[in-house]
Image (cartoon, rainbow over all chains, first blue to last red; front, side, top):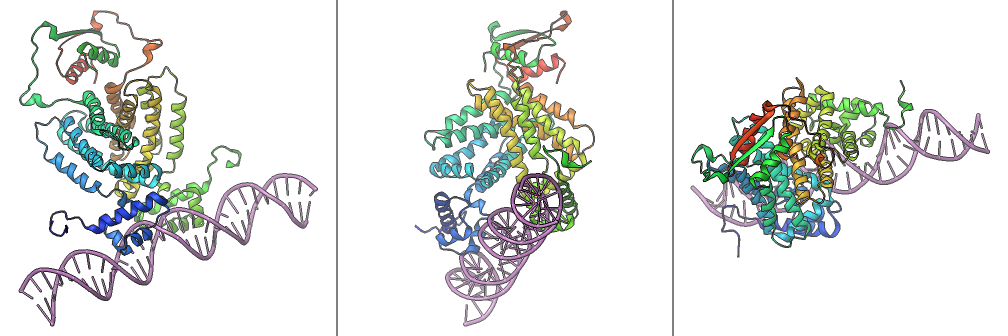
Length: 241
Length: 241
DNA sequence: GGGCCGTGTGGCACTCAGTGCACGGGCATC
DNA sequence: GATGCCCGTGCACTGAGTGCCACACGGCCC
C-alpha cells in the first residue's frame, strides 16, 4: 500500500493531498476566494511546502499537464520518417485527450473553473500554447526545406489544436458523458483532409494505381477562375469532402 | 490643441506618460526588475493613478490592444452577407497588423519584451485569444446551420491567427524593416486557399470571363491521387502560388 | 462670493502571492 | 555516533493589486 517502493516518478502523497484540498475549496467557495493559506490549512501542511510542489497557485489546477507535455515531446521525438507529419501531430494531440478522458469528473470540474476565472483561462492558454509549439516545432522539422514550411507548420499546428479543443470542450460541456474519442477523431479528420500531404512518396510511394479510364478525372477550367471554385469542383469530382 | 473638446476617447496625457516611463525602465533594466513604484516615480504621478489607467502592470505593455479589439469587433459586426466569410476574417486580421505597423519601433520593443518575459507572453496569449474568439464568433454565425459549422469556424479562426502571427513575428524579428503587408497577405492567402469557400455564389457571382483558348487550363488527374498534389499542380498550372 | 457637486488624483493601509533563508528532524552511509 | 542529505517548516520580506478617504480643481446654482 505504500508508495515508497516506486523510485521512478513516485507520487508524493502530499502533492495529491494539496490538489484534493485545493479543489474542495475552489469548488465550494471559488478560486479567488480561496487563499493558499486556506489550502495548506485544510491539507495540514506548511504554507512553504505548497510552493515546493507548485510554482504558483494556478499550477495546482493543472497538476498533470507538465508530464503530459513531456509525454508529447517524447512521442514527437521518436517519430520516424515514415510517419506522415500531419497524422503524427494529430496522434500527439490525442495524447492530451487521453489525459482528460482518464479523469472525466476532475476534467469537468477543472473546465468549469477555467471557464469562470480569467486568471485560470490565461494560464490554460499558456499551457495550450506550449502544446501547440511542440507540435509546430515537430512540423517545422518535417517541413524543413519546403517553401513556406514554417508557415504551414504553424498553421497546421494551430488547426490541430483548435480542432482538438473544439471536440474536447464540447465533451466537457456535456459533463464528460459519452466517448470523446470519436468526436476528436472526426474533428482531426477534418483537419487532416484539409492539410494532410503524405510524404511517403519519397520512399515507398504506395500510391494507389489507376486501373482504368473511370479512375481518371479531366477538369477544364478557366485560367482566371477563382482557385477556391476550382478546388471545390475538383473535390466533388473526386468524390470527396 | 486641448483634448478637452473630444468627448469620445479623449486621450489623457497621463496615460501616455505612464507608457513612456514604463518602457524606458523596461528597456533599460528589464520588466521584472522594474516595479510599479519605479514607473510612477519616473512619470511623476501617484502610484494609485497607475492602476486607474491600467488594471495590471502587464496592461501597460499592450496599451492599444483594447481599442484594436473593439475596432475588429465593429468591423466584423458590420460585415454583410455578400462578404465571403474567410476573406472577411482575413481582412479583420489585417487590422491588427496595421496597428503593429503604425509604430514599428514600439512594436519591436514590445516584441523583444514579450519574447523574454514569460508573464508577458502569457498575457499576450490571452489578448490573441480574444482576437481569435472574435473571429471564430463571426465565422460561427456565418457558418450556422452548416454541418460542422462551429468546428470549421474554430479551425479557420485559429489558422488565420496562426498565419497572421507567423508573418507578423518574422517581420518583428527583422526589426520592423520592410513592409509586413505582403508577407501577411501571402500567409493569409495560404489559409484562404485551404479553407476559403466563398458564399457569394448565392448572390451575384461576378466570375471573370474566359476570353480565349489560352485562358483555359485542362488538368488530367487520377481520381485517387492525393488532393494536395492535384491542388499543387493546379496552382502552378494557373500560374499562382 | 459661498456653498454644492462630479471628477481626477494622491496617500495610506491592507491582503495575498511568491521568495530567500535558516532551522530542525528523519535517514542512509561510513 | 558523526556526517551529509533531503524534505518539510517557520519567518521575514518584496511587490502587485484594492478599498477607502482626503484633497484639489472646475463648473453651477442659489
